Length: 482
Image 1 (cartoon, rainbow, N blue to C red):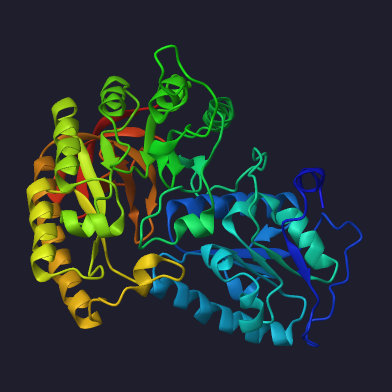
Image 2: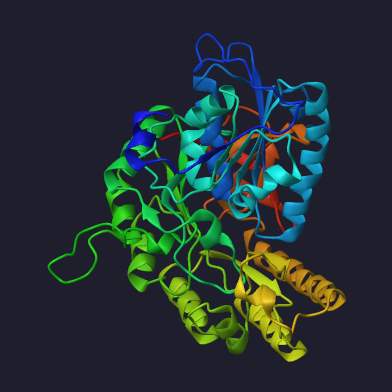
């Protein structure tokens, strides 16, 4: 256990190995090194999980591991899991079964479950999959190195205790060389009746503005062009940090953070996600309109277009409140893109209430909408209610909503036809090496012919083809870098 772990006490447990096929692993001469060993991480779920996976990859490479694309060839396999939907959780168990069979023939294989399923299931995962070496909740991602030392000592380890996330000094192995995730607040204090996240990711913990800016400055020196500030409920940023202004408001808010980091030289674009309508303010919208680097894109989940359903979800706002937010955004930033999340088939949802959701989608005209049928999750109030919507009804409502979403997205995208837009090139199209791919400031995916441009270039592109969820065009002469 390192000094930081010792300072907060033991919030993990070692479990005696019960499986004869898994003898204690012989420690290497240097327990912090793994020369020649290869790791693979499979990530399920949200942007927060992707950011956690990048941090864990950075830790492993600092320990001497090498990245391996094929998880069936890796010596250490991590599944960074999501428990928001049941289908994502079941997929994890399917993957685990394959690795468990591998481990029976190769006891040296190290098998780890991280993320929200790990936090949710804890030690019971070891009973279900005794071949596991480490079960680790999201709050423990930056402790992977010290936890693996316990595994090397011959223990199965469960790390799911409440943990104060100390400032992370790991260097993530980022998937992109152009865009980067920046965690600014961990956890969530909301109590939406359908959501397992507060139980799996813990209470809100904000990083200091200075630590966030320092990470962004490092990224700028490394050539990154775009950052996305991440939080499960990012509008809550700073409310757990000390300080009140003379006018009586909190000294640290997302709005203040955007002003504080905006002038980092080299960064061309700033995004943030995910917002909660309960805390989304006009002061924040005005700052986004004022600060040139902040992109004209807002992701604000509404979940349902019916007030009674929203009350049952414990969302803390009304449909009219959501409409006012969108109107305010469009008053300040007429060209801004709006994306959101919506759930159909919440317990008790009637056909009329579902139609209210459909009507709101048509009214707002979302550029993008992530949709899902309600999935009962363990330890959430809604999972115990008796008025569950039958599965076939949920499937049919989701189909109808998705049809509506595609129609709205196609209509929204028409505004780009023959327009010149600024695209940040992120890399080659993995499906067509003759194309580059990138995004507009409004987060629209754009494909363009490969030519003199490369990753990190800001390119002026005339849009020639419009589809519901992507655009294609040709670059005008030249590009610029910042």
